[in-house]
Length: 377
Image (cartoon, rainbow, N blue to C red):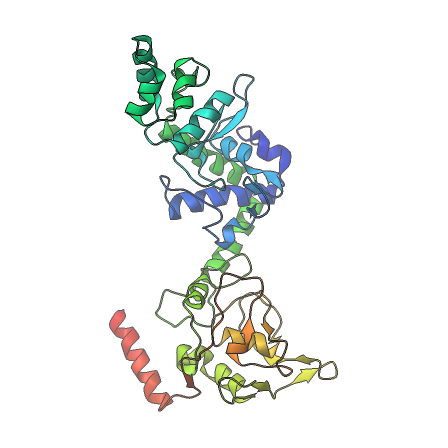
């Protein structure tokens, strides 16, 4: 039993505890302890247990993640301080950083809220306002001098709020917070070695996986996947409007023949016409089946032709579903006719940058690529 993290022992399975702890270690190493660990912005697969949609707070495995976050840093609820406070230094309500939370009182909530609204309001200024008010300066004048709303100054000077602020500076020893967090991670790993080993193996495999757009010798399109298995490097290119039917975008040794074989089975016409799949189908011609065994997040060796067409023209989108226009012919593979309905913020494209279905001299291209990689090394 890991005595330092009772929340974890009580509410989560050993597998979930390990995944939770590893998320802290990886965020600590990859994002940095002084930055916001917003789970809406950081979508690496290691953070897949966290939920930010349709909730006002960060949740983990459908539980409030905040007590778990504080427990990782050795901070627990007591009778006097039973409210979880999010520090004003962080703007994200979905932050995982343990130094951005503390157990406090409702006065602390008001204090942090005021700090977010009013730049410069800190313990020193609160004390100064009270001293000057006692010396005879009115709350109205103080509000004008320090550019703070009158009602806030009046409440401060009347000790209606922040009454404990002088004793609750929340100047936690951050070094101690990080040491406690890392120690808790080590204790959990020691308590559940089998689960930790399985997690490390799975994470390593995910970190080494490559999407079809990865080129040997390059760092992009490798080990950078979102919760749906989508390549995050590809998603950035999709946002920029990438759309190219070009076999030279793919590694010659691994992907060239597979990519070429796919497009050879598509009836490529004008850019505004439907490109009908002419390859294999099944279920009385109601489903297309394109041979594509290289998808890192699919065990099946075949995919629907429109999905593969999207992957090989715009980017690898993992388990997201691909849709064609309602007016399209069956199994249309024209990239400009394909979209992902779940991604409303991603632009549709009306133009194909290039159509190139073969290398000029494939052997010379291979030699040039090898020479380029040897120079980099």
